[in-house]
Every structure is written in structure tokens, then in C-alpha cells.
Length: 219
Image 1 (cartoon, helix red, strand yellow):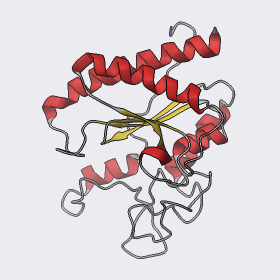
Image 2 (cartoon, one colour):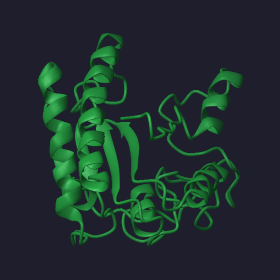
Image 3 (cartoon, one colour):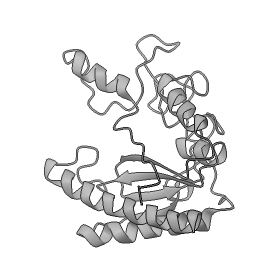
Image 4 (cartoon, helix red, strand yellow):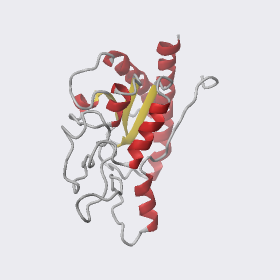
């Protein structure tokens, strides 16, 4: 399947935060920091939520204008170099990208647009059927159960999200936000012995999704 297709991945888009963790171990103690590390208009309040900073229905529902909040949407859309660069990469390849997945943790959810509204997009069934294919293959590996649907329907409306931009602006039909293990027992601090099983089942789900996309896009 990959003989004629490319798979691009980034282990961590928010590398500024990752770097900060390693360089300032004595000062930087929030292991679960979610924002970027850019300066804001408020002293000692840093960064924006990278998944609230995209230029699609920016900074409305589910986002904050307060630089001190974890869900701060940024001073403007694409104010953060991380989101701006990923958007540029995608825009430069507009028309060639058919699938985008934004992996997070936790909650065990395989979600599609929209994030900003509970109204389903025109291609929702096509997208959600892809989610179902992925989940079925994922569950078959270790029995892990996932939910599927749109972000707004499963969680709550959230504006300025990554997959709303990739779908609504970049026209990437199969745009997904995936929340990996678990459902709350360990939350963000998943035990080491679950990392490999999580990877195994996620890869199975990804392979099934790509086969589904291949059938519907290139058949």
C-alpha cells in the first residue's frame, strides 16, 4: 500500500515544551504542561493550546482568551510557530493529502469533524465509517474499547481545532482526532507496561483505516 503513497509523522509537534522539560528540570515542574512556551501579554503566563490555535472558527466555544488558562487560544490564529508550521506544511501539499490524524491521550476515542459544532459535516458518514473500521481492528488486538463520532458530539464543541482546519480549509476528508488509552484510571500517566500494547492496537487501527481510505479514494 505504501509503494505509491507517503506517510508523514511527527512524534511531537509541541517541541518547545519538550525542550523546556529537559533544559529546566529545576524550574519546570509541570510534567503535564499542554501549551506551547511562547510569551504572552501576561507575565508568567506562557503559551497557547496548540489544539485551539488553528484558523477555523478560532477562539469561540471551548476556548479561552485568558493567557493563563490551559485552553488559551493564542493572541491570534496561528500565533504559535508550531501550529503555523504544520499548517504551512499541509497547505504546501494541498490536494495530495487524504488523511490526517492528530493523536492525543486519553479517553479511547476515534473522532472526526466537526469540533466547533454538533452539526455533522456532509461527509460525516464516510468519515465515521472509517473510524469504525479502525476501532474494529484496534479492538481485535487486545480488546480495548473505543467510542467514535464527531469531537463536538462526543466531548463538547471546541473551536480552533486542528482537524476542523485540515478538513474545512485544507480539504483533507479523512481528518481525525484520536484519544489513546486509557479511560481515566491512569489518565495521562499511562503505565510503561501499556505503552507497547497501545502501540500495537493503534497500528492495527491505522492500517485498517488506510485500507478503507485506499478503497474509497483510489478504487
